[in-house]
Length: 284
Ligand code: ATP
Image (cartoon, rainbow, N blue to C red):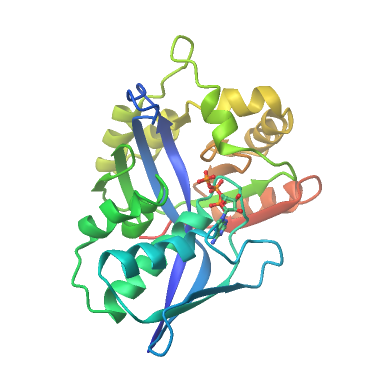
């Protein structure tokens, strides 16, 4: 038996960390939305052999236990004492290590798919708790759409869908290490975005308020190391973005526009100097 699950990219409209826990993990206060750029994850159960196999078309992603999709299958197989194997085939469309949560979304797709194929009957909330064992973005990716994310990533509150908008994603050709950026968080100097204001803007469907309150507390840390971040952001704002910021720990920047024509012009202009550029829309 097999299913195909879409695994969409996410962006952080708001990203803040108010403090860290005693075990060193960070407390999050984030607003995330999924967008219509997605990997396709085919999940097939294999009754004859308990092994887990992963195939991707990316050419450089690991196919073994380092792959987050593999880890998702292993966690369910072990926890529910399943003797079947799983074959996972991933068509990679979301840029890797970009701050777009592609690996976490693949893992969430495997959790949802195997929950159906193995008839485990787990709720999204139960899958989210299991997903936290894999990565802090997996619980959100289990739900997708637009949500307020708190705790270590496991407290997910779905939000009303956004009014129409267009989003330009631009990924510069630089490698950012997520643990490397998180290690540099200094709570003495961190500037906290107005997540409460952002939540109000979304609940009131007030786009100007949403644009005015978007923010990513980690952006200055990545931008300090990689000048391309500020460079692309400035270009986006000069090209007429209503707001622009980094997603996750970067390096992808995104610009939000309330007009499709403006977003399309921005794509054409940014393609001239940025490695990968996409025009996407939030998923509802
Ligand atoms: P994070 O912020 O969690 O590091 P990200 O959104 O920046 O994630 P991902 O595309 O999820 O980036 O990749 C993060 C790391 O996870 C990469 O080093 C990659 O090799 C590894 N990885 C493991 N499995 C996958 C997968 N299925 N897809 C993408 N990356 C994966």
